[in-house]
Length: 308
Image (tube, rainbow, N blue to C red):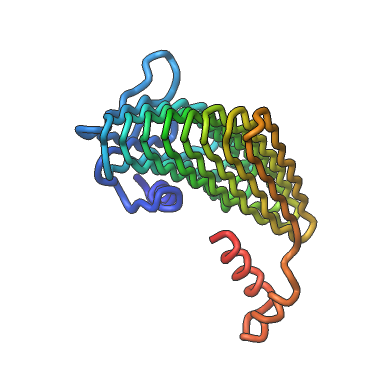
C-alpha cells in the first residue's frame, strides 16, 4: 500500500497496517489481502456479484474482523455485496468502512455502493463499526451509498456505530432491520457535512417479535450550504419498545430536515420519537471565548464534543 492508501485505512479502521485475526481489505475494486480464522471464514462470492460471504461459527466469543474498503484510483465506481452469517450464541466485533481519495479533476466521480446484509443468530451479539471518509483535491466528487440490511433472530443483539465526518459529497444511507422476539437493535449515527454536501439517511425498523427493542440515535452538524435529510420509520408490530432521536446543529446557510415516523400496530407497542434542530448557543461560545479561544476555535470544540 502507498501512503494515501495507508492514510485511508487509518482514517476508516484505525489500522496502521494489516490487522490480526480475520480480515478482508478491498482496494480499488479488488481484494488486496484476506485472512480467515478457525471460527471466521471469509469467501469470495460466486454468483457474479462483487463481495464476500462471511460465516461466523456458533459460540464464537471475543473475536473481531476488519473489512475496510479503500479507493485511491480516481473515477472508480463499484457496487459491493457483503453477507454475514453470525452463528447462535456468538459475540463478535466487525469493523468496516470506506475511504475514497479523489484527485481526478472536476468531471471525475469516485463512488462506492456497499450493501451489507446481516443474519444474526439466536442470542448472538454483534458490534458493527462503520466509518466513511473522503479526501482529495476538492475538484472531483466522492460518493458513497451504504445500505445495511439486518435480520435479528430471537434474543439477538446488534449495536451499529456509523460515522461520516469528512469529504463525502453525496451519500444515500439506508438501514433496514427486522427484529424477532427479545431482539435488541441499537444505532448510534454521527454526521458532519460542509460545503455543498448532501446526505440522506433512511431508517426502517420492523419490530415483529414480542419484547423486542430498538433505539436509533442520530447526531449531526450541517455547515456552510450542506443539506441533510433524516427519515426514521419504526413499525411496532408486536409488544415492543422503540425510540428514535434526531439531534442536529445547523450553521451558516445549511438546511436539515427530520421526519421521524412511528407506526403502532399492536396495543402493547411503546414507541417514542424526538427531533431537535438548532444553532450553537451564544452563551456556549462566550464561555469558551473567555477562556482564550477564538470564535472559530470555540465552535470547533463545541462540535467535537457534540459528535463525541
